[in-house]
Image (tube, rainbow, N blue to C red; front, side):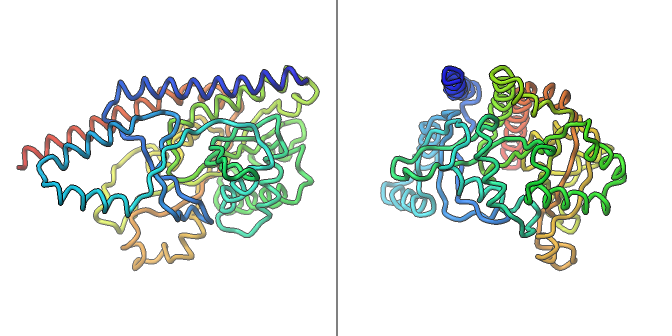
Length: 369
């Protein structure tokens, strides 16, 4: 068992190195791609506080930012340069860090709790119990974050992927709360409600609750590794302990996530027509779109926090550019497995399209000038 645990840790380390290497290659291919993003402390409903800029293991060089800054200020005098730099430094506290992948552990409790606080659309529930279940399920689950040498009792986690077997945890109060939440929303918003209940209530069908959470500004480059490593964890536990591994022989995965839709009252937001209902939404997690395309069924409902803010009234919709929704979907395990290897290419395609869009915008601006 100890030898297998060491092998699992080595596998996590290999994943860290692969992300680092792939990031270097990505930088050469997309040298203008800025993946230095803001990491902020998360609170309920994804409200972000202190501004911290980070660099993840994609290892996009800070040199790219420096070169851009030099181009922008090369025609300014020294006094103006210093003033501009000071303004930037006042707005952001820049800290370059490397993100690593970890197994669940108790030091991650507070980070995990913060990430799942708004999991049930702002509904008060036992988020501490859910965080506790996540960190205790050490054999399955991948966390991404950093180790702060100044915080020995806490490990900062910015995202994680894990799965709770619903039959295994069905008597846990927090799992009952989640199941009741999904059932209540399904009754109101899901045209395939009866079919969903037949699957979830059938003891012969094994369903896992896929919990896939990360902070709002977390780099998408970590996503393929998060899901790939999750599959590796399941493979490892099945080989290491077949009896324990049998608990994770899923037929389906059930997912609760968040999407957005352009506000029809916001005249500044560009809309596009599509025959695909999935294309009407904006995805906070790009992988949700891929999984939804292969899902068995899904349903969407307006987020409660949007309603609380008056998002359904004309007055407030004039102000909000996007309306928040919750999406619940059921995907076959086999479809999930087939989709995960495609996430890396999807990420590359997304950035290529973004670069083409930016280039086109630059050309249009030059023509207008």
